[in-house]
Every structure is written in structure tokens, then in C-alpha cells.
Length: 206
View 1 (tube, rainbow, N blue to C red):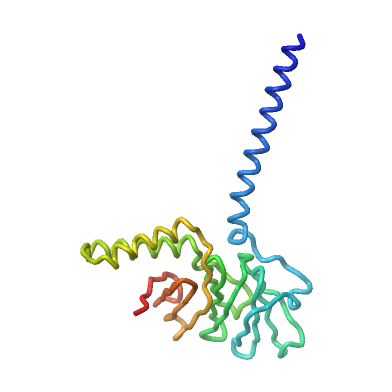
View 2 (view 1 turned 30 degrees about the horizontal axis):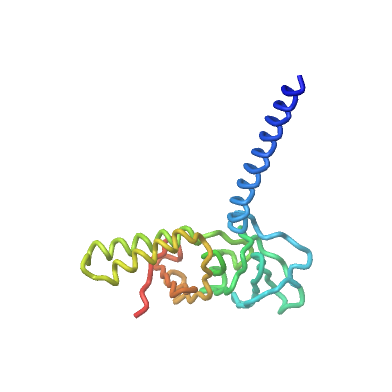
């Protein structure tokens, strides 16, 4: 009887340990994705957050910064309203091509777009997609120039970006107009768009 009880207790303990390990693993994987999946937390004191960049959209002033917070003011900074942002990563720069159409970039390879003067934003690009675009471009070049060692090295570099996940930040964005623009980031990342960010292409630094 005692042996059976010990066996039952042992099985129950093993089951409990496995449950804890499984839950911890799932939680750890979820944490990696949370900043890209979780909208910026709305706060009554959002204008007091750590804000890293500022821009104008017509007469409106906007500022963006840590945890995905973007705020805007229509009275020259006397009062601020927090915008709806779909991610909670640090945002490093914000630019407007027109008083209504604007873009913001930040950590995890994030590119955000607004068409209502920055009151709400949608995600146009993130780090997983950016790495996939790098891989696609590198493979196409390597296929076209199989003897070019630089092209083969570009594939190897792109593989590292894919393996690392969305940990590379975009640092700045420049919009020529409402359709053409460039984004630059760490590790020589540069992308461009010719359709207002609906699609992005890998640029080259020469």
C-alpha cells in the first residue's frame, strides 16, 4: 500500500512539474511576441512618458517614445491626447508627408502608418517581415550572380537576421512624398517604398 501511494505521489508530482515547465515555456515564447502584439497602454499621463521624437502634421504637434506611446496636441502643447497604437515597442522617429499621412518607426523593426493626422495607427512592417524581405532579396541576388561571394555572404547575413527575430530597430524615416520614402535602421538596414508603405523593398548602401 505504501509503495502504491509513493508511486501515485511520484506520478502526480511529475505531472505537476511537466505542467509548470510547459506553462513556463509557452509564457516565455509569448513574452517575446508581446510588444508586437500588445497595443500601447492608454494612460491619463501619457504626455509625461519618455518621448524621444517630435514632428508636425500641419498645425498639429506629435511626439512618440517608449512603450509605443504617441501623443498629439492641437493647441501648441498646452494639452495632449494619446493616440491609438497597435504595438508597445519603443518608437524612435515620426514623420508626416501631409497633415494627415504620417509614419513612425521603432524597435522590433516596426513601421506604423496613420492617415488621420496621427490619431490612430496601423502596423505596416515588423521585424519578422523585414528579415524575410532581406532573405528574399539576398537569395534572388545570389541566384542571379552565383559566382559573387558577396552575394553568397548576403544570404548568410540574412539567415542570421531571420534567426535573431525582430530585435533590430529602425531609427529614422524620410518620406519624399505621400508615396515614396525610406527607412533606415541598425546594422545597415535600409528599406524603401513607392506605394505609401503598402509594400517595402530592400535598399542598398554603396
